[in-house]
Image 1 (cartoon, rainbow, N blue to C red):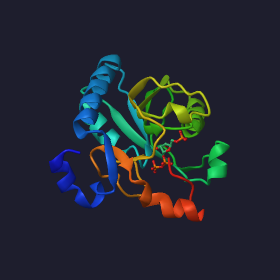
Image 2: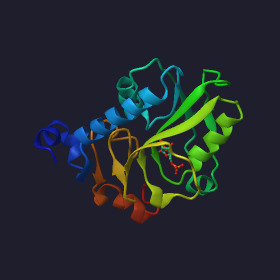
Image 3: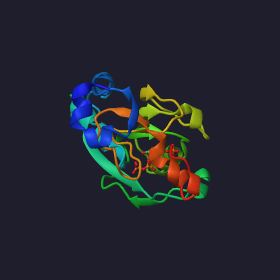
Image 4: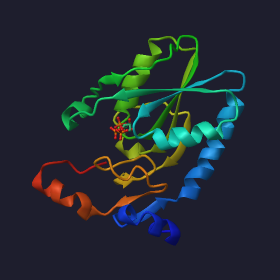
Length: 201
Ligand code: PRP
């Protein structure tokens, strides 16, 4: 890990066993995606739709990497039990404030694992008749996919390991790390062994 970053985020970074993506890796890729979106959506006044909360870092940086007029809105879904999650059950707890009929909508996600959340939300948004609906995900864990979902812009493919940082959390912590890394197993091992939680993903 970069020494300066390790020192700066010491209380959190000490729980990280390996940095997979540095702050520079992430910012460089976001600049590229932002430039591509700026070119492809020129004169389309796109609406970026993010899913809270994991997307907050990515959305903030992607917005600033886009150089054309753009609007932003957010959706929030309920956290669900592992059983409900595996059935693709998602409950909308905060809807969009913006009508999307006739709009060019770009759905922005931090990470796509099973694809179930995205699949549900795309179905919901499609019923509102946007002019176009595309997907931008910073991280893709394709090995965990249970359902095929279209992704138009991808930042990075990640291994099927539990990662935190840059919006990704474990029990709501580590989102503020500017890099992405593997969480040391002992941080979550006690709870996994006691059966009180599943191994996080
Ligand atoms: C993450 C992520 C996606 C979802 C993807 O959210 O932001 O919304 O999981 O998982 P899926 O492809 O298996 O459906 P999470 O439930 O961790 O909530 P958070 O964004 O508030 O951290």
